[in-house]
Image (tube, rainbow, N blue to C red):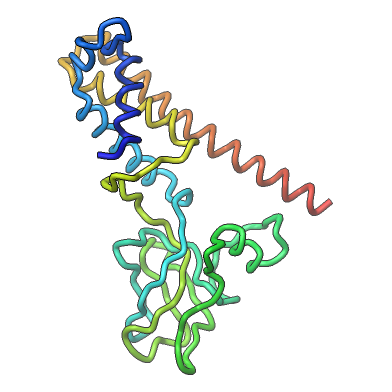
Length: 226
């Protein structure tokens, strides 16, 4: 378990009035540290499921022979195939003037070209509307194993002992931990109300964050255009 989740557990324990600076001997009495840390891990996975686009990265993946392609388990949702001008890239307007500039800013380690060898190149691609992990390439791949770069949403590895969540995730994670903690006990009316309060707050924080981020992006794009 990473130190990040243990720190979340300590903060949540204080908010649950289950830890006391004045008498540490009675800390984590109702909920164990490991239990709260596990809830924090669950929170990260839930946030990923709700807003996977916040977890995009550049990945190298192999193609299979043919037109229909499937993302590996390490990629959950395809955003873009690199080095291809055509296809349904779902690219939105940006303050950067070119796709290469955007990629350079997002992935400075390098994710600007496809890796297809020899004479084969992906000239167009499209994303399957009914499935996040299926996409199509044109022309069809002539063989298995040809590698390309893509931008896709990747599940965070919360089992990594060095895992560190981003700052924007902190408050919703805390709310989820409190929700799970209250839900884990025998439900009285008060416990059920507290659990619902924190679950509602979890969703509200994520919704407000997402809306605020979209508004800021639109404002920046509008300012550049004007």
